[in-house]
Length: 174
Image (cartoon, rainbow, N blue to C red; front, side, top):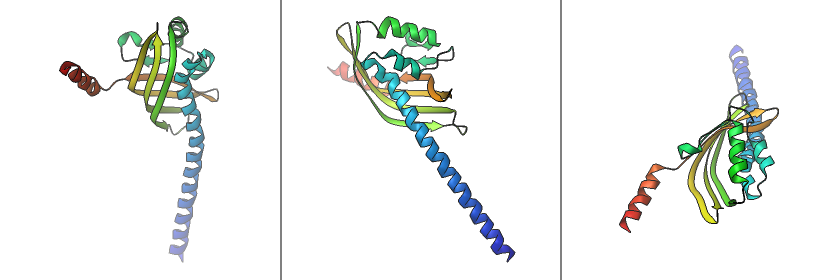
């Protein structure tokens, strides 16, 4: 009899824990949808130069940090980011034309207050009438939930070095 009660108790506890995990996963799915939108807005804003949408996507303090593929592109703090936005992206010389984001992975901390992502990005535009592009760009970042909304606090963009080496070999052959 004691064994039966003990087994029943264990089964009930397992079921309760399983339903709690499912509830957390469902909650996180909603959070992930919001995070996905913030990530897409942080790049898609440029199509219409909607800088308010961009600024809502970013942490607006000194903790904002980006690593870009070139060292001149490193951004530290929101004011540096705002300066880049106003003095490059908002100028008539720059025009975004399209972007694609795929293979996105989003994870949340146990507390649900921090998230990190990885995705692939193609970003197309024009600068002074000449086409620009980032293709097969690896893009990672960290978001934090502040005042009830998700904001990006850190991002890193890079290009796989093996792709560069393959392109260089192809260029040398031609």
